Image (tube, rainbow, N blue to C red):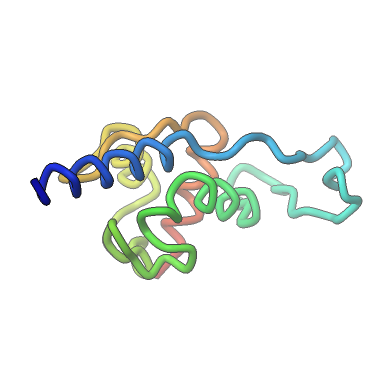
Length: 121
């Protein structure tokens, strides 16, 4: 009975985490968000928008991997970039791996997230 209850609780947490958050603002063409705060805008294709990557992480990954990448229900990610490339991280997020289910993150959000995580070494 305890295993069923834990499985149900863990499944609920994963479902809620996968749903992520809504759009709580955004940036316009000038690089400032709705609050007037300047945000980092990539200068070229090789630049990582760390603010966007961290925002996607907080909305979709922090529930299992910890707000500070320290782990929890999921493994620690503080040095994930020393193990996986951005492309490998994107594949894991998209398709899942081991006990981690596939996440509903795609497009620019997936690119920002995987690039940001790949920098964590």
